[in-house]
Amino acid sequence: MDLLKAKEVFKKYTDSYRKYGEMIELKINHTDRVRQSCVWLAKKLNLSKEEVEIAEVCGLLHDIGRFEQYKRYKSYIDHETVNHGDFGAEILTENNFINEFTTEKQKMIIQVVKYHNKYRIPKTLREETRKYIDIVRDADKIDSLYIMATKTLHYESNNNKMTDVIMEHIRKKEMVVRQNIKKEIDFLALELAFIFDLVYKESFELVKEKDYVNIIIDIYKNDTSNKELIDQLEEMRTILNNYVEEKLTC
Ligand SMILES: [Fe+2]
Image (cartoon, rainbow, N blue to C red):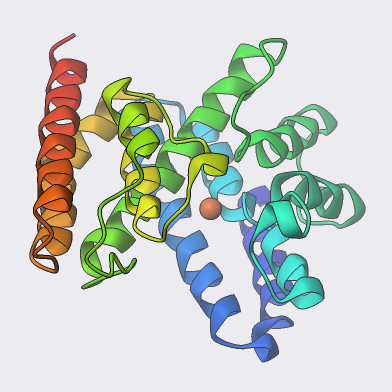
């Protein structure tokens, strides 16, 4: 079967990178959670069995570029190395992960991998392709929130507040532009602002059900005595919770 073959080839491929250590292991585990979230979301969206399978393959392969990226550069920072979406699309074109799918489906899966991490997605892509891109992007962001909520502290504030311009992004309910990041704690806002880019109502339901906004904000609030940072965190909490509620009622 197409999906089983893809899983088998993926396992063999990623096993060969395990010797590069813990960072590879983290990516394998991330991939597995994203794959499962893609299946969950596709089923919630009432997609057909075949479509759920394609969503699963897209989740499985979305970060396929990460392994060779790490091997070559010992880094996952795209702007200092390669864009892992483009790189993953190249790897899929050159390897046999999906060669049991029809040519048309192969092309679509490769596009999903290429565009899953882009700030803007071309309007010219087919609606079907866009659907799988959105599923992978939502699943990927949900996993970032999961990781943030299950770690005690991911970013150090060193008792500093966040850069002011970062809060402007939050107030405008938009993704944080990476170039505006000046301090480590700004990454907290960057990750929480992923919520503004979620597409499906089901994803917002999950964010609410898991209480990710409050759990993550509380982790950082409990770690600081900086009044200005606490005010920023509370403002973010209100904006994000209201945004999730808005998305659930519209
Ligand atoms: Fe990912």
